[in-house]
Image (tube, rainbow, N blue to C red; front, side):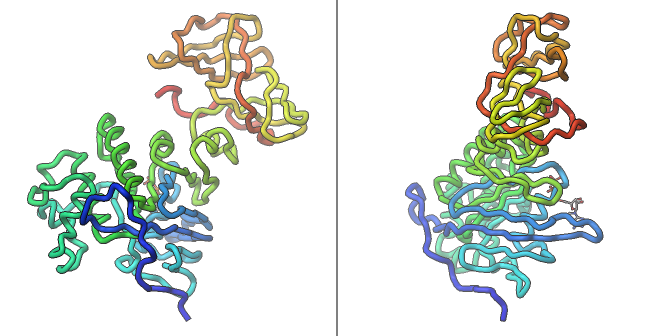
Amino acid sequence: MPNLLLAGPARPRVAASRPAGAPETVAEAVVVRGLRKSFGATAVLQGVDLTVPAGSIVALLGPSGCGKTTLLRSIAGLERPEAGDVRLGERTLSDANGFVVPERRRIGMVFQDWALFPHLSVGRNVGFGLSRSERRDGGVEAALALVELTGLAARMPATLSGGQQQRVALARALANRPAAILLDEPFSNLDATLRVSIRAEVQRLLRDLSVTAVFVTHDQEEAFVVGDEVAVLLDGSLVQQARPADLYDGPATRAVAAFVGDANFVPGSAGGTVADTPVGPVPLRAAASGPVDVLVRPEQLLVEPGDDGVVERVEYYGHDAVYLVRPDGGPVVRARILAAPVHRGGDRVAVRYAGAPTVGYPATGEAPVCVGAAAGA
Ligand code: ATP
């Protein structure tokens, strides 16, 4: 007996700021368990678990090719997983016993390129998935009102700005009252300045509407700014899901630590909740003993006049700068400073840890000591 409940939507949660007459969205939790998907011999999703609480935004973060789009498409029903369950609220959308087709899932999707039909007006784009009666009852105008594009129904997509086109794509995804919305790198088409303002706008909109949203990005800053929680997908497995600050301060693995922000892995010797390292004693979040590699973020290091190490290089970014310092008896570390640099390459300095308790990983003795994107970039 298929375990598929195709009954109507559950109790709607309507946001206070919804424009009059706008379509009601129904916030439902998205729950994925043990999802597996391969293409030929390539196992792309290797047992993914993901929970998106109703009405919250989860940013799915991972490097290119790790399976983000495949996961999103599997939730939308555009891919058929080989194993695992996808649920939306009380409904099972896919499991070993059955599969709900995409148009019955009540899930809206915004694609990377927005996929607007260039030969159709804004109104016809937004009304594409609506029934005739929904269109007659003002479904298009209501969806446009949601994204603050009232009055633009007759325009052609090409006559709109990038930000407006983005909102048309969002209106189309919201028009038939989805229980959740999936956004696949929705800002990647926008230039850097527009991207910052549009993503803030989209985030506000999703929040105001209380929509459950999964948002794919490979940009850590974007994931942190937009997501209530960030789920890190590496090599087809969801390694950690947490609020941005918890993820940054307490990455579950070295790989997560290196992917979210700059990371120094400083070798040390743990004895309880402190590790002795070349950058001084470092407090640990959990007791450990023996050799560890301690996660030290560049902004947690203090560089002062002294005689404990040498500045190898200074990277100046304008809004901040990074000293590459080699403490005596230790490997090079990156230390970020917000003031103008006062030391130069070759200067003797003191470098010490000045942050909160951090994470110690089992020492590998082989991992890069200093990884991450260019600081401040
Ligand atoms: P990006 O950030 O670059 O968009 P992603 O994390 O979204 O990447 P996916 O698009 O899910 O990654 O792709 C994961 C892997 O699956 C890649 O190696 C990709 O080549 C492969 N893949 C995706 N779709 C197909 C397909 N239809 N047929 C064969 N291989 C596919």
